[in-house]
Picture (cartoon, rainbow, N blue to C red):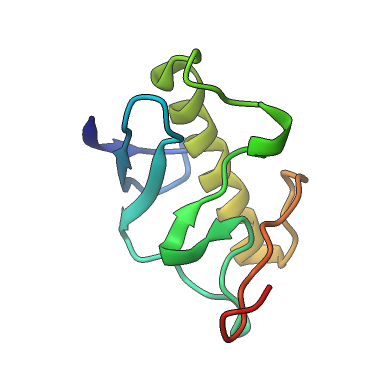
Length: 109
């Protein structure tokens, strides 16, 4: 499944165009297509996998499995992620908690 849609995390937020690619039995890949995600003080947003894929949950904790319904889990999590992102842009703090995925530097974690 490939889907593209608009998400507005809060009434004060702008709209984001989000793309989701889901292959049955695998985790959904979610990216913000427009507008381009911004950096803050030279830092890319937290909770991003390589290639700007949103980190919405921790797979090792089975917070999402193929038994879950994408529209009932992933879509609301995208909205929450975007709200945290907007707060981070303003304050530099990520209010959503969670664990940040390890970033690779020169091919290493």
